[in-house]
Amino acid sequence: MPAPTLPLATDFAPATRADWLAAVARTLKGAAIDTLAGHTPDGLAVQPLYTADGAIAPATVPSAPRDGERAWDIRAAVAHPDPARANAQILEDLAGGASSVSIKIDPSGRDGVAVGSADALARLLDGVMLEVAPVALDAEFLGRQATAWLGGAAKAAPAAPLVFHLDPLSAFAAAGASPGPVEHHVSVAAADASGIADTYPKASLFAASGRVVHEAGGSPAAELAFAAACALAYAKAQTTAGMTAEAAFGRIVLGLSVDGDVLASIAKLRAARVVWAKIACACGASGPARIEARSSRRMLTRADPWTNLVRLTAAGFAAAVGGGDAIVLGAFTDALGPPSPLARRLARDTQLIAMDEAHVGAVADPLAGAWAVEALTDDLARAAWSRFTAIEAAGGIVTALASGLIAAGVEADRAALTAAIAAGEIKIVGVTNFVGAAASPVEVEPVHAISTPAPDPRLPGPDSHCPALTPIRLEALVT
Image 1 (cartoon, rainbow, N blue to C red):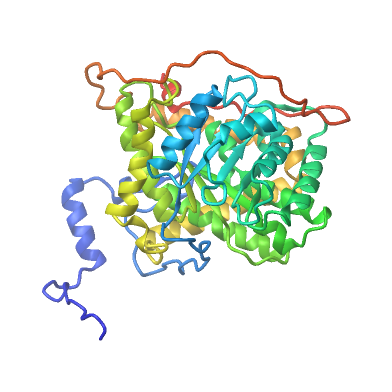
Image 2: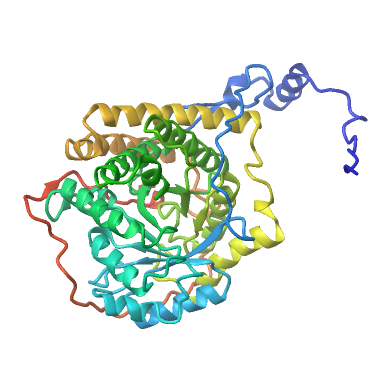
């Protein structure tokens, strides 16, 4: 029998907009109702009240289907330079509740695990069951080599859900240069990916990430547009390498940032699926977007770092409600240094509590139909589409990067952020608001300099150049 419907609202008279306006008028004490309206970093209007009148039709773009019992993939980030210590962290994360790991590779050891060969990666992954625990790579221009190393470590096990995350365009945007023509990096990566696709049918090949734009100060629409343009470039390269459009889009993961602005982050992930569906449909593909959502690094503060726990919890909640397929939460000490075991545990447990105790993932797209969320999703999708089409009109993502079009947009967004912080429109707890006494100290992981030889990722031809998208921290924009 169907469960009975409880008439919870029958004892309350229907509320009208006039009733709401009357209540608000008493609170505002003579101020205009317009003072409650706001705007997003993209200049999109945020109304104080949304009603059925003029409501946006709900977005009907589905999320990717869930695999297994978990609502999303809890992905732990590993970047300790010492491979032995990084291996211990991987095993600890997986034993502690993470379902996959994301490994940042940097042979210099300055910004990732010092790995530079197939044998070194195999030692790093010692004890990891690759058929069960997905391993995601972040190797920048070494992506092609790292893909071969990971493929070898999996020993051609067709069930291994590997995540190669080839993404030379983000590496180019972040560094401002590429070792050889960046177009060549994209085409060669696509050829390599096409060759390994049949061996690992469950593997993700490319990451079309907009996070480099977000971390440099870009707006949500700019981040979405960059990710969309990268996705299109990677799909074209894969089809040129012999894949069908359906297969090409099916092997791409969108990488997006989430921060403490819960509704904005939810709207961003929902808008990403709208934009993805429109591009995929135009290219003859039909699969839903798969999204890896990562917590913003630019939102984390050095001052009173314990407040970062609240920001990360909000970001994780937004990623889950917004439909992130894999969620990577950073550590609350990331602005200070490598995370301690406590910080890593909290990054995992925050998601585990949301999933297993709060049941955040029990409902797919729980805010679908909410007037405010649908309006924000629609407005953001349109703004992102406008910026995406501008990139394509300029000649595509490589040309837009080289010409400075992307950097100019991000610079304008960053200036608007700085102005909003100065005007008090953006508040940073512990920095601009609620600044208290010195916070209790936090522990970070001790790190010793380490490096290892690695193959040269250079390809034949002249280097490509573009204005680099340098990461920021909002805390540093406070004047």
